[in-house]
Image (cartoon, rainbow, N blue to C red; front, top):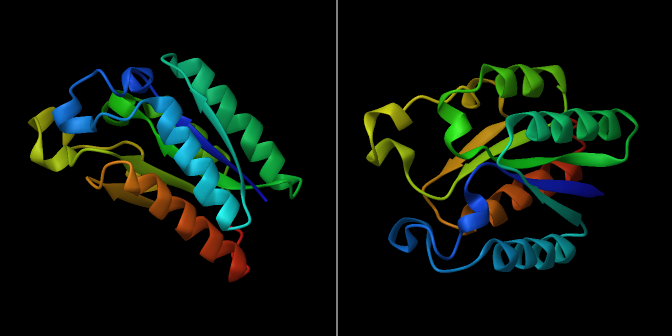
Length: 154
């Protein structure tokens, strides 16, 4: 079954942007790791990244349609800074329900600046994994695979 790893703004800078917070691995390395882990779980992992909110919305809408057709399992989503500002992404995730969207953040947003403590995504996500670095993506894939094995669609 297909899963999308969707990354938001500035995640294309992984490996060079604040490596003390985000690590030294590039986005390409993270995506390769996710594809390998997903394959071991029997999942086909596809990846996308955009710095543009509308493009992220389009991906969520498209994957919601694939989920309704039985062609996609869900989305692992790191919305980056849009987490704290985007009601549009909140509404899109709500709109593609019951497709599970798992929110992932590499850093512990609650240990950072106060403006990062609120998530518009968490209330509509199937779950949130925060502060575990790149491993958070793998844990999200594990969760989606378990949901599939249990016959859960949302």
